[in-house]
Length: 177
Image (cartoon, rainbow, N blue to C red; front, side, top):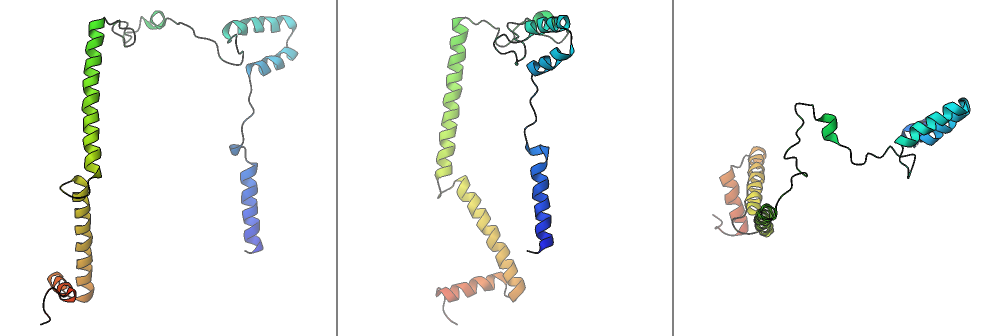
C-alpha cells in the first residue's frame, strides 16, 4: 500500500470518527432548561414558571411529559362530523351469549387455520410425488437442461436428439453401430 493510499484511508477513518452522526446528541431535559432559566429570571418569574410546569409534569418523574390519565376524547372531538361515539371497539359491552358466540367462532377459525397450516407443512415436507415442491424442482431442472441442450447444439452443431443418442451410446443403453 502506497503512502498516498494509506493517507487517504487514514483521513476517511478520521472524518468518520469525528462526525456527530455516530455520537449521541446532548440530552436537554426540562429540569436543565428550568435550571438555566432560573439564573436569568427573577425569583417571582421562576416560581410562576415552576408552578405552571409542576401541574403539567409527571409527579413521579418531572423529566417525562404530563400524565394524560382518563382523558375524555368524546368531549374534545364530539362535535366533529367523522367522530363516532357508539359501537366503538373496546367500549362495546357484550353479554355472555354474544361473547360465547364470538369465542366459538374464533375457535372454529383457529382450528381451520391450524389445519391449513399442518396441511401446508406436510406438503412442504414431501419431496416425491405430486407436490408443489416436486413440480417446482421438475420445472426448474427441465428449463436448465433445455438451455444446456440448446447451448450445446449451438457450440457443437449436434442436435438435441443427437445429444440424447450420444448419451445413450456412451451409457451403453444402445449398441455401437
